[in-house]
Image (cartoon, rainbow, N blue to C red; front, side, top):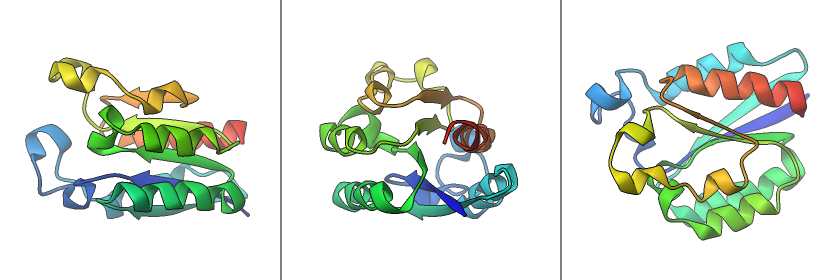
Length: 142
């Protein structure tokens, strides 16, 4: 069984409660359900969330040995973390970047992504369906 890591950055633990007008009412449990349903035969997902940059980096390092691909919503670290970019650059499998909202219709600082410099694909603005699409893609190319 191949495992896809679904990594979520800061504040995504509040999904469904924080700014539902932007992020909707669904939760991380809903994300996990969608990703599991999107998996091809022989694949599974491991969903994790942290508000701490170092923890996300540790999981990316762990993925080098444990995962065939990464689907990541880095949250605000998208726009700030060269350290996450460096960790992703050390991962050899496919990386898909996901954003629930359409970041390019939001504040200008959200238009730049360090993660995109490594990502094999970027999905923004599809709501939680973006996670499912990213998971399907990793199954295709992993």
